[in-house]
Image (tube, rainbow, N blue to C red):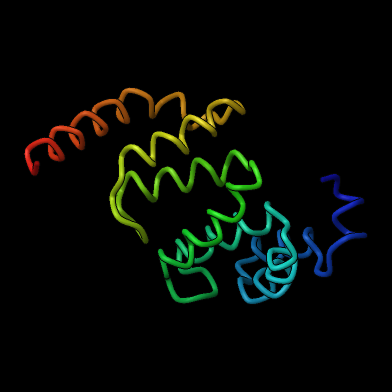
Length: 138
């Protein structure tokens, strides 16, 4: 979605939110981005996820972060897919699940998410450890 279309389609001002975030004014960023996110703007959804993950302007809440990442990731936003993969990989806000983490990391990587490049080897090790633990439980 282009910036011009975003402003025509959604209420809230994306750039005002960024300016506020850069000043550390999380309340304004939240006020600008929440309506966008609730109306389906994937970028705003991912940014709300980050705010909830970090506890910026809101109480830190990994479950709520996952909810926003999931909404954006399902729309194909690579950064949100990567963030959601991290949540599954580390068991933050969701059960630790290396298979699910791998699925989201792969989707992000298909779109060229740079974070995936350095995570590949670590993920392979995590996935193998997770599978080993699952087999030991069985």
